[in-house]
Length: 237
Image 1 (tube, rainbow, N blue to C red):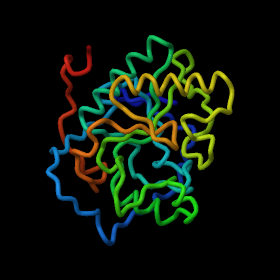
Image 2: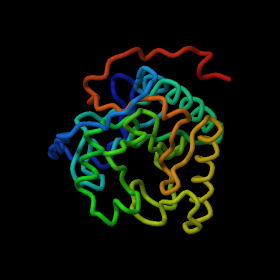
Image 3: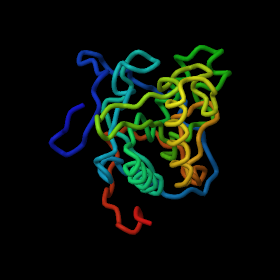
Image 4: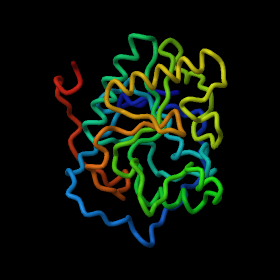
């Protein structure tokens, strides 16, 4: 892990310098929805709280596709979800942990790419979202994350690895060690306090309340523009 000049700290344990990004294409485009929807207000998570660490696996080769699919290692969420995440992180600090984010807002074309490269049996088990319906990640209202130890800066152990296509990934899986399950359950409890709901098949995937009020988006990270300031009242309670 290194510290960037901007103050953003990012985990780079799995980055391959020479890997080229997979180009995500969307020949048919995102599904059309009637709405009405809230205006998108995507904010960069680490600019609200630089103690939230990033390990954006889809900007590296360390993901289930085997190649980078993002050109930039960044994470965005709709503002209410991002502000709630800051509160979760502050609560975890009191317990010796911090949040480690793997993914936030995901352009729809990347969801389509995931679907295209995933075997049919894995699709049927729900390991990837169907692009015909879109993903809550596409709405900027879902986040994939774990925790890191404040004393070491290292990712903590959980019952499964991130993006593992197995029963161990379930949030109620009974295996693993006592410590792994305790940390997984702590993460879930802290996230639920702030309006997030865990995915039934992935302990790391959390959806923010009101996700259906936001539209499916297909904006690449480099084209996201907007305010990154946050009021004290919105994150402190």
